[in-house]
Image: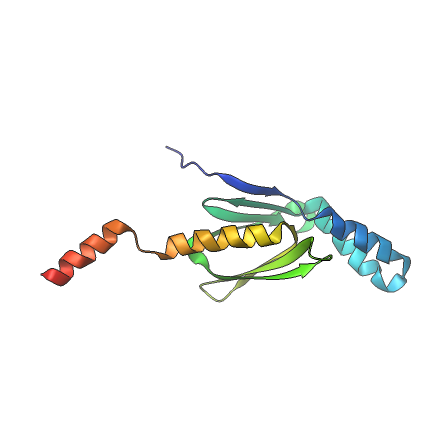
Length: 137
């Protein structure tokens, strides 16, 4: 029996990141930024569901990171592109970090992720009943 997941967001980085960095390619100094933005646009994909966050990227999209919400300690965002997109860093309970660059609708996604984190950190009502019974005895 498969567990259903509702997809909240699925897609790649914001198109404004590629456009901005392509315009900056006029200067030779910003050429590495342009190449990075193009590579992200081609191979990087985000998927945020009701159960997990998946980031597929790396060279030719061969790397995949899956993080369930109970593993996330905190979420930090930094707006870019006049606030149209932003970078997001997920700090995990083991101290490692997952960076997500050029995320569209990053404020909405941050709120959604924080809601899921809060749900996972709240003990379920069944476990509260069991612990209350243990305290009475």
